[in-house]
Length: 412
Image (cartoon, rainbow, N blue to C red; front, side, top):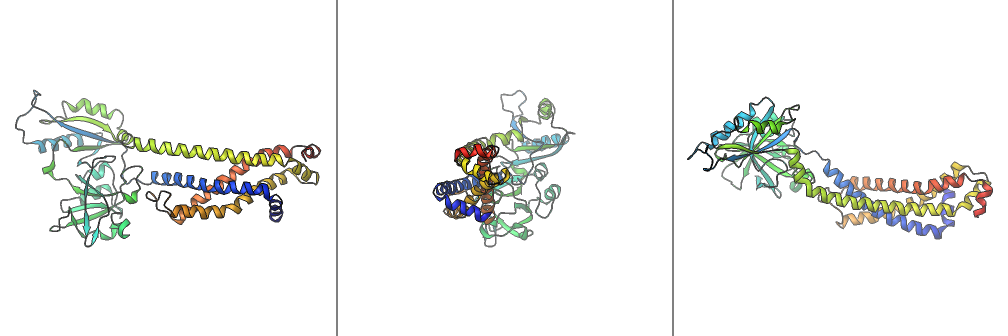
């Protein structure tokens, strides 16, 4: 059968040359499109390293001298904030509460830090998260050695810090897990060292940033930093989400105002995530829509090409039927010729695609270019084009195969 297909393709080389050229161009363009969508899918579905389900953000405020309840010369702000957090933690629906400074997920306002061990220097921007220990319980961080959020919370002290496992991976190809228990320098200060208590599973900065390139460290928030600009993060129990915000607001005036400190706003992290990712999602949606539109045009182009090719050869198919070919054999021949043409041009198309990748014309920042990525995208591209060929050949070949041989010979 393969020899017959080669012979048939050779005999019709003139028309097949144009089809082969079209398949070559289509294969390269489709590989590029598939690679882009594959990268976005892989990055978006990577583990986040945290869990925001059932979580809420509380913003605090302070009374001014215009309020009748204002307490002048209030020097107990830290005590009042601590009491407010404790009152929230005692609520039966609450699982954990934490204080932090510019540290919660999907927060565009961050501080950076350098983390140094011996001659190893952190690469790029390391997000510094100043938090109370329960922050790890609220967002359910996990250690690379199987440490639970509760265990990590106990490890976070003034002499210890925690950091994501990928801190030195990109620059030195070293996992931070191997350095747990070692002494590090923080904030560029070489006069004091801090112990790495545990290595964390990578914490992604956003849904569109790869975990490999999202670096962070956690250090205990000092009580001397307590003020109303800190964020209060809350995790409620799984069955307590319904109307939690309204219930907390209802109690905020009587039960949750301490001195000059009060609850100013409450938001769910689902809303925070949606707002933070809105522009990125819109941009991604536009790109993907354009790619899908391009794929649709490619599909219609190939469909038309092979449909016309099959219709044009009705006479030949009638002759084959007159010589004893079955309908199934006719379908196999037409599809087989198209697939064989694709196989012949697909290897050159992969060579072109490989060179495109090495010219940095594809996204290698979010996902490094590897042979596995190249093979997966190449395989998806091949399967999609084969399906397009089958769709373009199957229906006209099927309708022709149903004709009586004498009627089909009229087209010859």
